[in-house]
Length: 336
Image 1: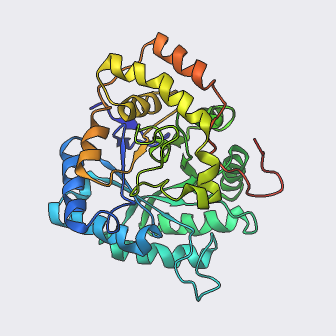
Image 2 (image 1 turned 180 degrees about the vertical axis):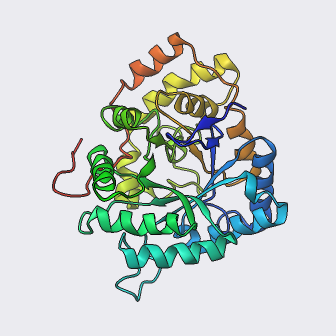
């Protein structure tokens, strides 16, 4: 496996990151342990979770898995903070110093570790000055509880603002950004990726399979599978906006490429994402061992120049057919 630099740090990570969102929820603990063990055995050394996933259970199961297999030291362990963890506490969410410090301590306990390799701000919050957020993260780094910090679903200008604030105040800066990115939504190619390449920011895409829309499990004019993420899309505005007719035209155009390579549609989509310019490690989120094995099968898949031309014709660079990047984080946010 060819490992990659995590942004401009000296840390090397695998070209796929194991997302742990399902662990402790739809995936029971024992199967979660097995999936983590299999991923590590396959060479994956990068794990990503968040405090809000299954109300902390994802972190607990991930931490227990690493304690059981004794491989914590070889893993680059990432988690996130921002979401609501205490519905009765008005300070129980967000990017304030109070919330970040408290939730880092809670994540460390759940993960059963002394430090977090990459601690990420899960979403921007314009009503809290970015320097307050960075100061809290910097203190965690100086205390040895966090090694590096990053952002998730920030816009390019918000990342640049954070870099300016870090330089202005002498604070540790974000080294990664975690945006949604896949064949169906390529809008980060317009500004976020060029910015990241200029400033040495690692890009760790979430939902590289578009929440399952690029796996082939959904068919035109057919109801979504009962146990799928889009099963109730008609009653959920965000999902309804993503389940558009045009995505099936894209899937129909991609399937012949996958068939010619002898790979699955999801393997083709993952191979495309992990080898796009500026991308460090797309985050896979397997719910079952079968899904993990399919995801691992993307590692040897290669795309030719002609393959890229076909994909670019289906969804041109910088464009989208199914909206995942929902930029609405303040008065200066771009609306695409």
